[in-house]
Length: 173
Figure (cartoon, one colour):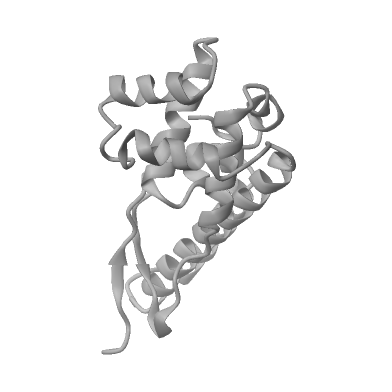
């Protein structure tokens, strides 16, 4: 179909999404900013979400990199604040890719507390799962048009992906 566009998603789980009819993948950029801002201003906030949040849940690559820096600090039992996250991003060579220190400052200033961070993190998790399912659905649809693919193998693949959907939510960075 000439009206169907394929774009490359710019995140660590990059894959081709078929976005016919102008649809963009499910996302919540404002919630991503809120969660990251909460983590930057409240050193204890990560304790609330460490078991449910992963960098892959963030749609924006910049946000994935920031969370990876935060997670690395957490794993090393280091404090998490604006300065330590900035230093970690500098060490990793990612500070310019996320928009510099100014972007970290903006994130920290846009929230007044980390209230409801678990709730917001679960929403990010849900959006990630939607993107993952859409991606898989497009892949199955594309393969279904190819007659050389066995339909029963496609069904097995579909059921396997659904079964694994809860498992990949909890894989840590």
